[in-house]
Each structure stands twice: as C-alpha cells, then as structure tokens.
Length: 218
Image (cartoon, rainbow, N blue to C red):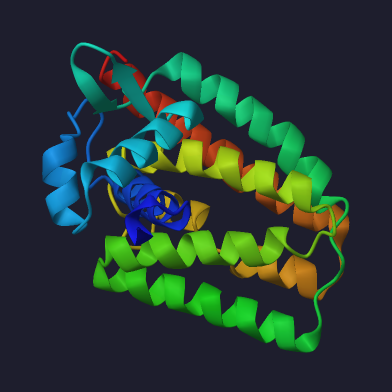
C-alpha cells in the first residue's frame, strides 16, 4: 500500500530529476521501468507515475510505443527557458526580504562549500549544494508561487549543465558558478547589485550552454 501513495512517485521523480540534471542519465537514454523499479526497490506503478510526472515537466519524453526517454537537449529550448528565467528570477529578486545575520552565515557556508566541492571535483555533491543555495536565496521572497516556478525553470535549465565540464581550476567558467558576490550583495542590501550579479552569471551560463549545443549541432 505504501508504494501507491503519492509520496513514493514524487520521491522517485526527485531522484530521477537530480540524476538527469547531474548527467548520470544522459539525454536520449531510454528509461526502462523494470530496471528503475529494481534500482529504487519499488514496483512499476510508482515508477511509471514518476516518469509521467517528469514527462509533464518536459524532462522526460514519452513515446507510447517505445517508452520513456530522457528528453534531448536543443538550442531553441535553452533560449526559451533562459528567457523565462530572466523574467521570473528578476521579478523574484525584487521581492526578496533581506536575510538575517544567521541566514547570511548559512549562505556563506554554502558558497564556501561549493568552492571546496569544485576543488575536489565532486560533481554530485556540488549539484545538490548548488540547488540548495538557490532555494535558500529564492525563499527569501514571500511570493512562494513565483519561487516554485523559478525552481521549476532552474531545474529544466540545470540539466543542460551536464554537457559542460566541471570547472575545478580558476577560470572564467568557474567565476560563473561562484556565489560569494551574490551573497555579499545580499549582505550589503544592494538590490541593484544583486540583480546585476545574478543576471551576469545566468547569461554567462546561457552562453556556455548555447556554444556547446551549437558545437554539437543541437
């Protein structure tokens, strides 16, 4: 009975979403329900529901005759998603409430841990920590519907990150994912700087993604 509850498909979907975003499940891969059920120690029912949920989000493609596949990446999709993020995130950051000292300490700890994980080349842990700091910042806004939409779009574009190498050394690519300037803008209560830093990082990531997709003729 536990497998038939809503929580189980949602948990499986969360794990699959993370695996796709981290590149553990590459674009175009067929997602066999039997294999996934064994992997997650569940029956096929919650696995199928999880895949249908991801299909509704656009992360997974469903062919009634062939099954479920990790959605392929395209330049057109990336441009549209980043444009939506521009609109949603800028609106969201204009509504955030400035963090408390305790919240700033948490954000600084996240930023420092991200740098450490990059040095170590730990992509899986880095991805989890990267999502966490975004959620912390976005949740400073009281507009939770917009927060949820921002995170949905963030997840959809973050799966493009799997096609990029992990920047372990100092470089322009590593600066894109550095969060210290973002946290300091929050500490200074400088909304203009906050918007500028976030926009700059987002656009730089977009350019890297589009250049890579173009190189791969996608």
